[in-house]
Length: 271
Image (cartoon, rainbow, N blue to C red; front, side, top):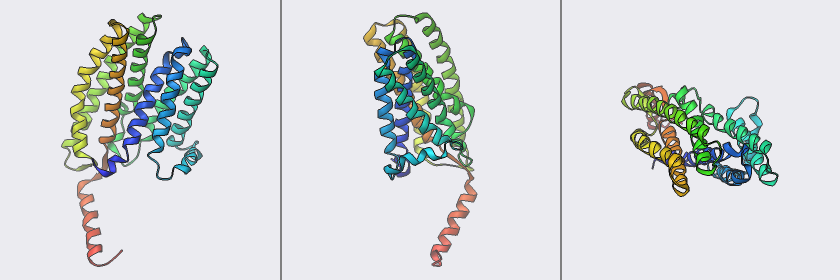
């Protein structure tokens, strides 16, 4: 694996695990006693995983200093707020606690893509990338409802079908965008081999989402949990593809010119 990409692996797992924690919390307004504890555990685990991305972990609280202007600070604040809300709900379960955890969790997931609207990274911008984490989490939330709860199944089933269609549409656009960047000779993909692997994952996810949705809709309880696990794997694959699709906006010719200039300076002994 590319050394630079390995530093992004904790972020892949942080965002995927946090999305599944939120998915568990979404139906918690109806039955917080069943769902908030595992949501709290997964959310806390996601926060711990995120620390692996930091070089100096003691400085982690400094990420909150830019709350008014930085989406990274907002993401950290919202993620911590979600875990706290879920923890409070575990101690004092009730519809209000479940609702607060669900809303703060969705806000956290919505912040994931906003963090990466960076001027130089065309691969991380665009509304399909922005909506995809929220849609996938809502989809897993509807699957959680169907896997765990016996009430409100008709509404959850209708929502699941709608979200599967939305998720498929977003996936098609994301795959087309990644394929264009792979063909573009004037832009530099940061991880071309991994990006190609991510592009090949899209057909796989289509073959996984449909049977997983059918499992939570029609199968006995043990198979429902299998379907829910598959949705978690789909989210993980999506996050891998997102980070692997990093593409610089700087044209390749400009990058080559910068490289040659640096080599000339090195050859002349200039630092």
